Length: 167
Image 1 (spheres, rainbow, N blue to C red):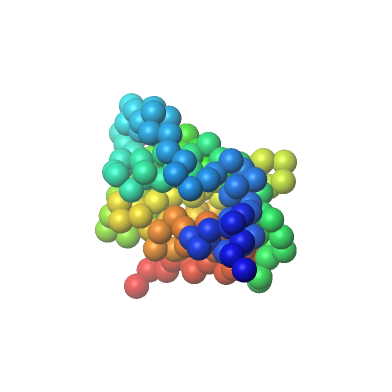
Image 2 (cartoon, rainbow, N blue to C red; image 1 turned 45 degrees about the horizontal axis):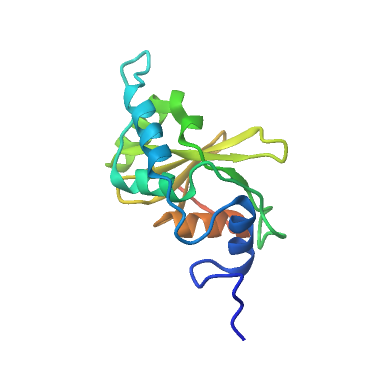
């Protein structure tokens, strides 16, 4: 029997966590996404670094921006991550994101962050111009998926991300 509380887009526990955070199919707040884009566009680091801005990120912000997502169950291999999808958490990380983008041969901009239960920063989430998603934390840089849907599923399901390495 078809469960009307979930979509085919996300696995059950991921869909449930997203909906509990306020997401639903068709959610679209382009006004807020454009505000974030304007704020990021206006920021210049002390070293002159600027944020990359591109349609994939603005679309991700319009659909998922502002959500505080708590995982809905135990993780598959790791504890699932709680997320706060607000790109301004990465406002002052323009140089770090520019360095990652240069290493990857693309532009990268902030997406939000992984947080602890009391919403303390754990890792910065970022997206490149092709929609691929990354996490940057004290232990390294991680590839989370080819698009935001894959990244959300990985993080909220507690699967292992792939460490980015040179060479």
